Amino acid sequence: MYVMKENIINRAINVLDANFQKGGFTIPSKGLYPFQWKWDSGFIAVGLAHYNIDHAKKEIETLLNAQWDNGFIPHIVFHTDDDSYFPGHDFHRSDLHPLSSKKYKSTGMTQPPVTAFVLQDMLNIVDDKEDMLNFIKGQIDKVYDNHVYFYENRDPQNEGLVYIYHNWESGTDNSPVWDDIWDTMNPPEYTFERKDTTHVDASQRPSKREYDHYLYIIDIAKQNNYDDAKIAELSPFLVQDPLFNAMLIKSNKALMELYELFGGNEDKIAYLRKNQERSIAAFNQKLWDNELGAYVHYDMRNDKPIRHVSSSSFSPLFAGIPSKERAEVLVNTMMDRFGGDDKYLCASFDPTDNRFNPRKYWRGPVWINMNWMLYRGLKEYGYKEIAARVQNDSIELVERDGFFEYFDCRKDTGEEIRKGYGGDNFSWTAALIIDLLKG
View: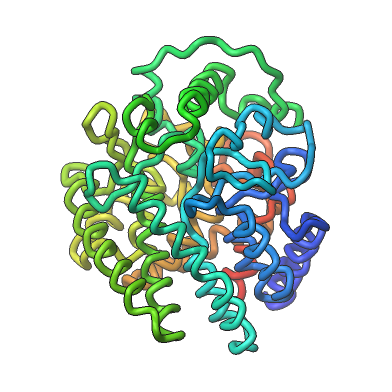
């Protein structure tokens, strides 16, 4: 077991080192994703902190350097002029927003706010606490400004829940959850050249028609210079996402605890605490579906919940959001729908739903970043046996198939042996397996 563990860790380190760029950031996967992604960088920094703290700190610093003047952090930072990815910076046009970074080209959308709890994890991992605290002290206000941005610009109804205006902001790009929204839209057919399908089998990726929806939402945002108030008014996609809001709540807690270590930040702590209380209350009231026994997404544009269970439904465990009683209901739902002996935990979408697809991106495969959060959440709530299963399933998938982007959740597909899909040598898979093995 020890030899196997060390072998996987060494292979994971090789993946991360190969994907680390001269510009001080790590690409998710060569060819498929040639730039810096926001939440990828957070998860990657956790893995890097175990063996190369300089790279881990640089990862976070480089991301935060691209922050806009209003606190916004984009989901992709285009450090290079690489035309192997679509849509690139010339389509996104972040320069349309008056407060966007003048130095870095980026998208005009964001991703789940993981940076604060990542900084706290890095502090817990490293031996030199003083050095890490000094680093955090130099970065923490930028992270705080990002949280203020969300509460001041992404919560038009002043509920304590923030919206996303694009499925890419969720991180769960083509989840079947979004199908209900696509049914309300009829975007034009765009002419463009897909780059992702030159690296990955098209059957594992979003369809051309799905991309039409994605590009149309961006065009609406661009027409309004990425103004959040106009987007809230006009975007056909406006969602309160349980994963996104759970990451904000988890990061709020981390920010408050980090600020308390430094002292003298009473106003910022008070602001975070006030919004934290509102967020948790609204989350439990608005996003909980009693009949499903799970948290769900809320479609603000059409004023109704989206009643499907996905791995995002279980992310509140990681953030400590449900009561112990509600957590028990949530875990039972997960095990009933996702936890069969014939499956690895945890599929990204409900295997009992007719929209489930075990091979296609976020429509059913297992993702290691979601498992990493689920593992920690289950442990925190006392579900140690299920947590161990999530941990062991994750390690088994990587040991057998390699460091893929996502994995088939079925233990026996009746077909080929390999069940790893998407990008190979995928950075957050490598990074978080290191953390799972050392945790």
